[in-house]
Image (cartoon, rainbow, N blue to C red; front, side, top):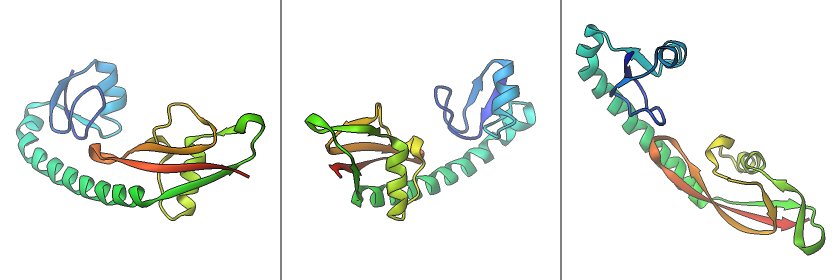
Length: 147
C-alpha cells in the first residue's frame, strides 16, 4: 500500500514522503490516526501543497521545542529519597518521578520524553537527555539526595 506521511513516523519516514507499507499497518494505524493518507492520484497532486503546510507546521513545532529546551536546560531537579547502606536508595527514581518533579517547577513534560534507560538507584547528579518534538534534545540535570 502506498501512503503519504502527514507527520514523521519513526523507522518509516518524514512528513511529506511517499512510503510503501503493509496494508494492515496503513489501514489500521497510520490512516485512522491521521499520520498518513492514501497515495491516490488526487493526493499525490496535493502533495506539493501539503509539503509546504507540513514544513511550516514543523518549523513552528521546532521553534516551540527549542523554547521548551531552553527552559529544560535551565532547570535543576532535586529528588529526595530514603537511603540504606552504601548510599543505595530504597526503591528507585523513575522517569515518572522526574516528570512529576518538573511539573512542580511549572513545566509539563511527558515522562516518555525523558530518556532514562534504567531507574536511578543511587545518590548523585545525573544529566538526562530529554527528547522533544522535531528532533530537539535538551539536557536535564537531576540531583538525587538523601532524605
